[in-house]
Image (tube, rainbow, N blue to C red; front, top):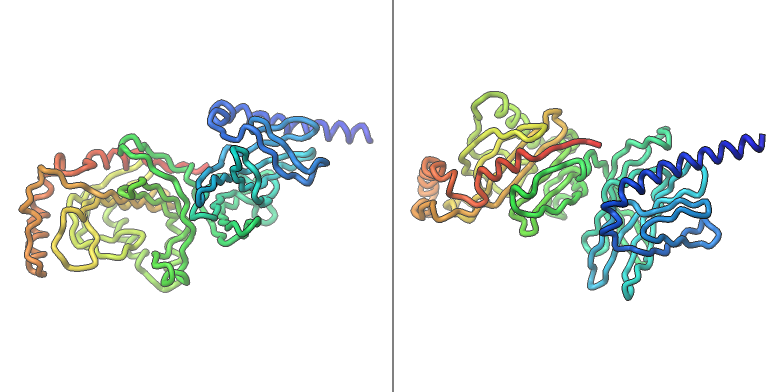
Amino acid sequence: MKENGRLLRFLLFSMIFIVLNDFFLLTSSSFSEAFPFKSLTLPLKEIKDGTITLKDWELKEKGIIAGIEPVYEITDWGGQKIAAVVLFYNLGGSGVYKRLFILKNEKNIWKPLCYKDLGDRVKVRYLSLQNHGRIYLGLIEHKKDEPLCCPTKRILRVYEIRGKKLNPIHLSTLPIFPDEISLNEKIIGKRLIKRVVPRVSFSSHGKKGKTPCPSHCLFFSMDKTIILRVIPLKEFLDMWLREGDLTVKIAVERLKRALKGDRIYLRAPVDILPPRPGLNDFSILFEKISFKNGTGVGFIGRLTKDLLCVNKDELKYFYQGLSHDQKYIIDLEVKLKVLKDVPDYLWDCDQTVKGLKKQIEILQRELPKYEKSGFSPSIRTIRAFIGSISIKEK
């Protein structure tokens, strides 16, 4: 019986080794080249020495298999280099445990500041350091009664560093991760930063001045001239309907109706989701544009809080789309620069309601003539960028 037990343990350990070794082989070619942590010593009280030292991000010896997940981030907080990494380790048996470490750089040596155990066989899908002391972690964890091999619960956890501890400050569902959204940044000519935005509830709406919205993925350029959101639709609808507010439901129904036929039956003010502080009182060049697995409506407009004349510096290209499976809203906002081809007289206007109405009529008639040469980025470029967006859940 003892021999059978030893054989079983050996086979089980061998299987884990093979799985983790495949992981090393798949990631080492690209990951290790840019990996900044050539040698890391981390506390691990589960082993005799109490610490574990990784050389070139991995360790396979003395019955221990360990390494760093290929999801990490380095930033600068108050002049101090800080990093977040996730250690995975197996000490025999079937468990593959995950531990989040926050590291600080002292004289080019990365030293652990604090850590948090994440559990056995959870999947780490997103990691970000933001707002000088907060760690955003996207995980797939286990639902109640789920087997350890196969977690399916997608969540966002946010921690805050307080002294030498990581304290949880936020927990919400996160149906989609940034790595499940692909797009071609080269088309638009700007690098887009990927982020996860935590849920903003109605209870905190007044305090933070932000629109209530579920946790979602955000992509933006450094100058904030391009902002793209991918928002889970059901969660968005549910949170507004629970408050008895039909704003989102009405906007989604209008968008669905607009997408049904060949012609787009929309007119200003056009609904923009998530709701913005302002009125979109001027819109032109309505068009249906499809992305890889969905379709939506694009147009040029503006957002204003006052009934003042349209200024060329206010113009933006908006896109509101729905995935074919109705799971996600695609919201794109691109700041437009009006080029010299567009004549200056279009912006002349009496600062009255009557003057604004007359100017809008002129703009709606004249601006479409400059669709090909009047804006930067060009409308053609924006269309191509939208067409590159793809959502593929992993």
